[in-house]
Image (cartoon, rainbow, N blue to C red; front, side, top):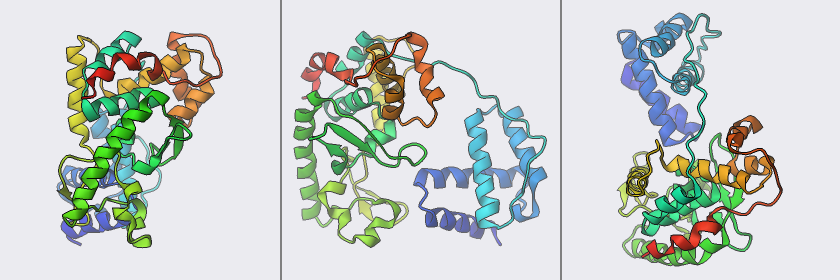
Length: 329
């Protein structure tokens, strides 16, 4: 089997299991790197010893993080088990990358005000949701219109990290601004429909089960991209969600303008959500549910700032909201 045919088999196996396009890109990249590391030999000629050598090389020579090494291992496990039907079994003697113990970077209340105040239009809305609801970057960008429950003041996060669903809080003060934003999004969707487009990507082949759902209003992204693009898997022109790199640059610029000298990013807003909830007396298990952590120990890292507990969940956005609303225009 030629290498190109091998990679096509890998992509087909990934898509059959409905893995995300990011997982597909990452797995294909690692498999290619593994092949080149072993002088372009076909993986079927290699085994546990060669996998061990590659993973050790990543840890020793490339100094990759533990999560990066684990991703490479997962890609190779998938290749041998799901594509080649030749599991390599137990690995022995692998030098494992060390997982550093780091405390999360957290904004103070004043710093959160500063960052959100330097965001504008839809980026302000996204920043408010990441801080006010504890959303990860892609969880925010992948929200669909139907994931916002205004009656229950809830946000439904679908297929978050670990492919888990969860419900998190929607701060009441966000409702009128999200409604105004949705009017603009609906007008954009209507324009796409009038031009013969309007389809959106649906997960897990739902477009085959529900042929008309890909144009339905509820399935549209809450934060659509400014331009339509070609779906690399389906070769169809669609409007994807807002590009994460644009939001990341916007948040970085806002941090700079707020004169905050921390190694902060979009994820810092999520860290700040958790820490500020605990500061205000929220119970740690409730915060765990809001963040979607599987293990309570992951949530406990935020307790470095306090030593008390509580019950109610009121989003920290409510306290700083009025200081940011003038930046919505």
